[in-house]
Image (cartoon, rainbow, N blue to C red; front, side):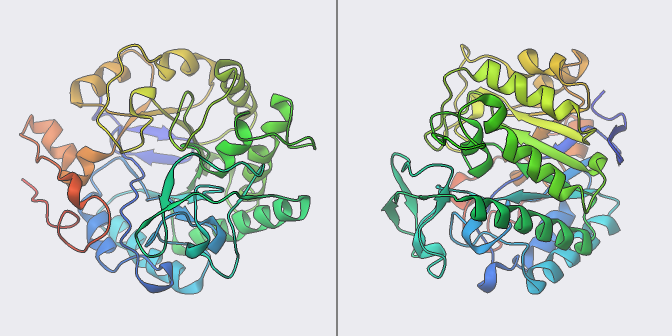
Amino acid sequence: MMFTPVKLGAIELQNRLVMAPLTRMRAIDGDVPNPLAKTYYAQRASAGLIISEATQISPLGKGYPATPGIYSAEQTAAWKEIVEAVHANNGKMIAQLWHVGRISHSSLHPEQGVPEAPSAIAPAGQTYGADWQLHDYETPKAMTAEDIAGLLKDFELAAKNTHTAGFDGVEIHSANGYLLDQFLQDKTNHRTDGYGGSIENRMRLLGEVIESIAKVYPSNRIGVRLSPYGSFNDMADSDPVALFNAVIHKLNGYGLAYVHMIEPRSTSAGGNDQNDAAAPLTSEIFRKAYQGQFISAGGYDQAMGEAVLEAGLADAVAYGRLYIANPDLAERFKQGATLNAYDRATFYGGAEVGYTDYPAL
């Protein structure tokens, strides 16, 4: 079933393997995608769909050193070359639009100052600054109504730039404890205005972001990524099933290309290889509530991916680390070939090694 075509909204996929969004921290000055990214993504174009690495919509949306943006002409031009290379290899590619909120450090955007978030609550732990060293998290600035209006304009501009670059659509990053997730979950959203309190209010910003991007793309070229039960980036909600069922119900009204959910067994989001057998399966809980196409991600191997497709719990399966190490993962799965092992030490930063030098069959 993995090698049958599928349509996600208006996007036609040749198979049901999705290359998950993978932060690699290799952008060059100006947060422009690395010239090597053209090779890296083109090598992986046999995936049914490539979702780009998370790409910040503004300087303040940046949370790590050397992540690419999509708010300047130079960034847009570099992405255009990447998308053209993927299309030349018969691939499909969408851009994941990202604002990290409080998961940042002022050294990454000195002109903009401290990070912004729904509420002035610092996350536990430390994060990487512009010097690639760990720093304690700062207490973020609680966003004003004006800040939120500016954010919606930033999402719209980023969507226009992805459209100029030729992407087949966009994915809204509303997962993993970044800004839109921070608005959804009540551990991080203590607001008392129209964006806080009730679940309906906490979902409001996600809806407004979808509507901003829908000025640029038809809704059937917009996806949304969610991570129920995700604890990554110091996240939690007092009633995640009620919250995310409400989110799914809201998303049903938009006619999106897809919803993309991360299984809790991989909520460390690329950290430890953990498989928590006791963790609930989001595909089982939320798939039946969503009326459109559904992508499931998180620690899948080939057999698990086939099983979730056969069970009707997903329409496509996203692979992350396996795609880092196996540019031709689709061909390897099809032939039952041995997979290259990934090298975690080269996931973030650097140049060709661990990026474009993994061998194809």
